[in-house]
Amino acid sequence: MNDRRVTIKDIAARAGVSRAAVSLAFGDKPGVSDATRARILETARTMGWNPNRSVTARNRQETGTIGLVIRRPARQLGLEPFYMEFVSGLESVVPDHCGAVLLRLVKTLDEEIDLQSHWWRTRQIAGSVLVDFREHDPRGPVLARLGIPAVAVAHPALARPFTSLWTDDATAVGEAVRYLAALGHRAVARVGGAPELGHSVIRRAAFTRTMAELGLGPGQQLDTDFSGASGARATRSLLTAARRPTAIIYDNDVMAVAGLSVAAEMGLRVPADLSLLAWDDSQLCRLTHPALSAMSHDVHAIGAEAARTLYALVRGERVTGHPVQTPTLTPRGSTAAPSSGT
Image 1 (cartoon, rainbow, N blue to C red):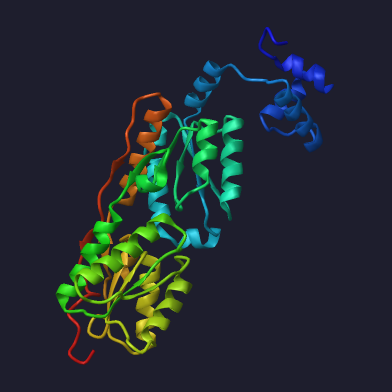
Image 2: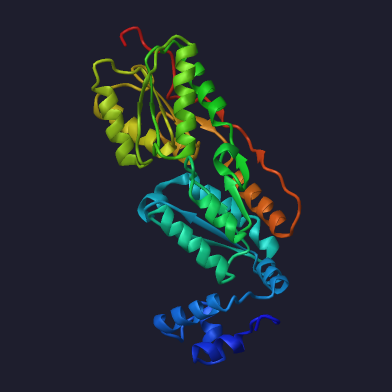
């Protein structure tokens, strides 16, 4: 068999099964037991089986399916407008490519790596959009070695070796802090997201740096899991501290809404006693009273651009990473100069 390409017939003979069973195992379809499937795949591996690459590439392009794995609890994801907007952006592009978005929620990075690898081996996806990067993210070397076309929604310093789309979070954080300082706030705090995420690291550093540049000290920063419950707990902790902040920046809109409720619970007036500023502007920010000031960006447009960039990669086009819209300040009723009594 060294002089020709290994075929399904060869694998079936070596594994002692039918050719139909081999096809079912390769397609990850029902009809064979887990033990038989494992034996077939191991036999194929030891025989050096390799599908016709041109056919495989063509099949992947024709599926048009984009893989998206998100590490969030299902209940939390349903309450988080960011990913709903992001997925809607992907969905606005895939019909033009006869495609779909294959979305799965997982708990760990290892689960995601296994799932992405499985999707690729079984030809279920044309490529993937990758989100929520960490520093030294383990997905890079594994998925790159498999050859999966992928677009990373992350700063290029985090996203290597993938093509990346990113927002300038450091500049946006600086704008938010400078705005609150210009209103007269000297005690500014930040309620951040998961500390292991790369964009949380970038925002934390930018907050510390800008506060120092303005002579405001390091400022208080608390980490959360992005949920409303953790945002509420962080807000209570800040508002019962010895030096209560007069302004708080939140890493998403859900936590900012929770913070608004905690302020009311503690008898504080927004914005007279406390200014609140959200990230990821959404309908939630506009429906509260007062409406929440926010760092706004078009999340739907980011999703659409990620899909377009990925399809270009799948077609074999030369694609370079590029920044997308930097979040910009949208002042509303939740921010104002601090009252003289605070």
